[in-house]
Amino acid sequence: MFSLFKKESKIIAPISGDVLDLSHAPDPVFSQRLAGDGVLINPSDGMVVAPADGILSVIFKTNHAFGMKLENGTEVLVHIGIDTVKLNGQGFERIAEEGSSVKAGEPIMKIDRKFITESGFSLMTPVLITNPDETSSMNLLIDCTVTAGKDAVIRYKK
Image (cartoon, rainbow, N blue to C red; front, side):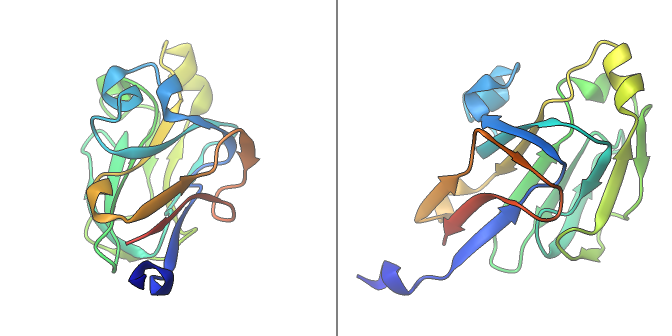
């Protein structure tokens, strides 16, 4: 009964592209939802933005992924590409700083799509809530094309 009064929150697309079910991720850690639940985006551009208002709790040294903690306690991970950690930061340009407070749509990272794909890596980008057990409901918006910083890809209630 009280779930009717819970506010719906959303995670917006951190990168423009086509949204797929996470099961299509070419890495079982993501496809089997071992790191969290969410969506997979096949990017169409190279700007990565904050998917919500919050704190950039971690930006990996190799810049291939970042985590955020939102005000409501939700933890979000954006993992740019698959196995891109092996690039040791090449093809990634960090714009924001770890520990900073960011607003949804604010630039976090710029990627060189051509360099990354020509280096043999997939750009498929998992966007995950890493503590999904703290949500009461989650609606994943898949099979659509989204614009970074504008379109919701996950709607959920705590």
